[in-house]
Length: 123
Image (cartoon, rainbow, N blue to C red; front, top):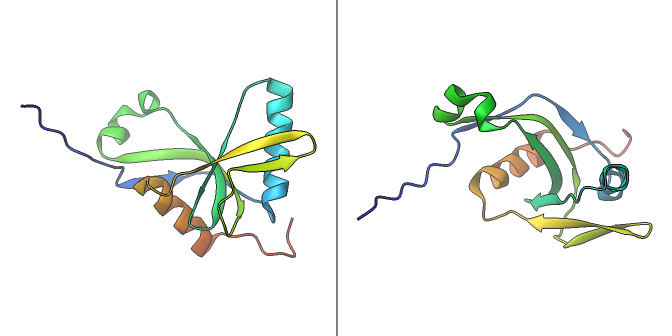
């Protein structure tokens, strides 16, 4: 019989953090990138936060990955109190995926919400 071990990361290192005051502002940036690149993209949602995390591939830092440490070179985020599966920007729809069941992403969203939400007077 095969032994299965679930081993979520023990640590996420965020090296860049970009706060948006609204989900619409964040989605506008994503829609622009989608339009220019032609590549589909989606935002993540958990814990009242909508976000996009650019994770460094495990192959780039294999020793850190084996130790349970992953790196996010940038995390862009905005408040989103209730989950919605998309954000409309003009004639585009930016998909939003509920990642609440993913322990690491849920904890990242909680950390953002508790420590790094943009103030309404900031852009």
